[in-house]
Image 1 (cartoon, one colour):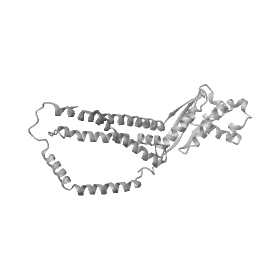
Image 2: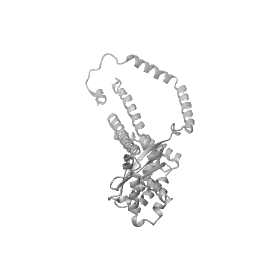
Image 3: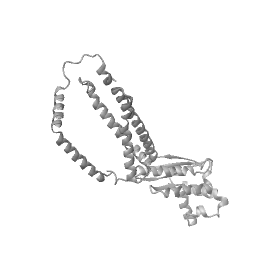
Length: 313
């Protein structure tokens, strides 16, 4: 506000020039550019051409990076002793298989993993826990007996991390291969598919580092939208205040919108995807740099408001 109003207030201008040596240096630089503008233009054209030729060579620096991120799924069957039934274990097995189908999910471990292994030692097969009908009439008792054996042989904290005392809640733990944000998106899509197919009364909550990364991604997407809108609003208001013409203020928004369309198109062509997915990519990665670039340009050129030359103001 001070920068915008200062040229129009009746303040007495200081007699002493501000930063005279710096001003002289600027004059010398711009005068030199003006005298040798042909050479400068040729040099800029050469640099631009060289930069365009380097575009195909660009690569993501962390392209070879990969790691793992832990996740912890807490599932609620909605009733006491809910997971002692065969239907509950079949649903747990469906969740496991759904997660194993996704290449981004490398490992999952739950109470079902333990029960299958115990069934192998007692019955000679892991899968017979879910396929054998011999124990259907006493199935809850069988599972409870397995859990009793298991609880007596492991650390109580380990046991309680898989199932609660009421047999209502259970968990699935594991790791996600993390190379880039696409792996996080794959995991979130799988979770949504699992959640949509849960039996009536069931619910699922995601915990762990993967949940924190998802939260940060949502914040980044929200911050980008706010930054883009706020940056364009500042551009619009700045042009409107300087030139007092609504038409010019509206036209000033075209470069930002055009750059969005251009970047989204480039990304969609590169990945062979739709324009919408290209926009989603831009939203994830370029919001803050665009806004910071606008801020640096805005505050740099605002120094011209202190100029004694009305045309510069």
